[in-house]
Length: 414
Image (tube, rainbow, N blue to C red):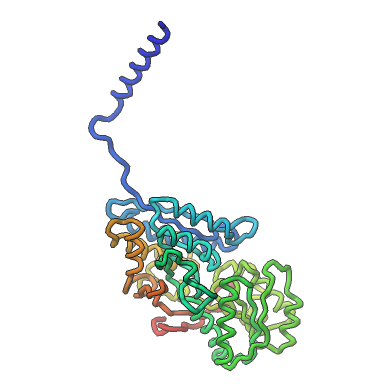
């Protein structure tokens, strides 16, 4: 009984001390916040490219002072790759999308980098009414009816509402640009087309193949490769036997583009090797090595859905200069797309009324004549950018070098 009384007295004394130490007046509440999530492959060779994208996203938020009105903007950088694959992983992408969908503060999802990953995330986010803005997906079937497989893009929109948007041009444009470049600029007459059997790679290879007859190019072969193979020597022998004067590979750095190039060159095949934007990253040059990339070995070309950093003008050039000042290097090609994706999302949040998922989604869909780092553009009825500017690039002295602008809006280039 005495022990209980003493304990009670001690507790009362402690409570008095805490009360005295507490600030007087009404308790200050934490400011409200909204969350933006990105889901990109941060493990593996794409890391350099995705780090530049993340840097671009952070710069866009910093330029807003980290706030929109009374709301703090919080950003979460999620990895959708696994160490086992060294590339995006469908299970991890699904987990990322579900995590964002279940977070009531999340009003925007920036991603994905790989089109195959987008197929996983899109229906999950669409059911949750959460807007998704991609800085890198280029597969047409994600948005354009009749441009992909059966039931695309309807299967990605279970709610019936379009909730997916992208700031980069699609492969139905890029594949045709690559084919036209081979025919008109390189004078190619016979093409051997390879692809990595993935959504993005095969998709753009299909576009190249479809465009070839109209460009006067005969398709000498169309084959899917094993991206995990240690070498492609037997394939090189087959390519040489067809008399192909250009090789197009629909794939990425992560699906062995560099190894194909190395085997072509070591096998004495010096014809032009053309790849799409999935290889427009320093990791491709590093993986291939200087011998395979040297002019003496044979020309290398890379198409890209836009202009490389050094060719950007106006607000794009201003972004590059700020990036160089902050990070001490020229940003990789997709950095500006991460920046633009975040800028257009922040602009939509600013214009949204209640600033909940529904109003932010509606504001993104209503984006018209947006004046950004990629010029002035809008989202069309499918959620695609109206920007059609493309470029062709090569490699010189171990670095990417601009060749020409192509596609719609090429006159904007300097």
